[in-house]
Length: 187
Image 1 (tube, rainbow, N blue to C red):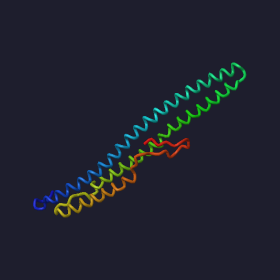
Image 2 (cartoon, rainbow, N blue to C red; image 1 turned 30 degrees about the vertical axis):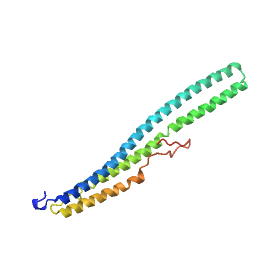
Image 3 (cartoon, one colour; image 1 turned 90 degrees about the vertical axis):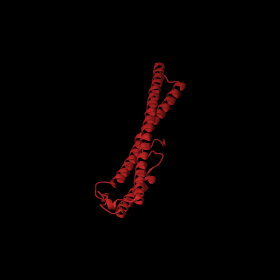
Image 4 (tube, helix red, strand yellow; image 1 turned 135 degrees about the vertical axis):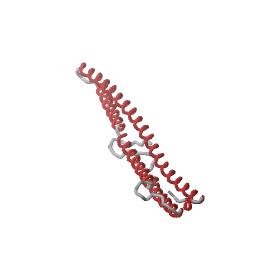
């Protein structure tokens, strides 16, 4: 505890409040980025599930139509040009639906990117609060407001270093990096 004669004066108190507000601001920035990424992950997963369901239902329906066409060919014994064309069109349609389903599966790659960004933000947040941690560097001096200001300024600088890494990591979009079946960019 500070001795009464070494308590901070008003200017020192104002500076302490300013420095702690900076710590809070940096922490809030990291938390806001994690929240935005979590919202993106949720939206991405919901959209991917919808696309996968639609693609698999379309595959199921097209296979049913193909089976009907094949039954007609088998019943007649000989494929007419119209039946052959119909089977070829159904084969192409099935291929498109399978491609769409595979594209829908690419959500895993994009969610991995978002999760990686969230981990980076959380590590930054740990760094922000770690600057105030129990390693002894954040222990307030027993006396002297100048030492207290120097300590808080040092903490503010360390926290600021964590925050300067933030803009290079944050992006408003995630990109597909794997799977050769097509590019998608949902955000």
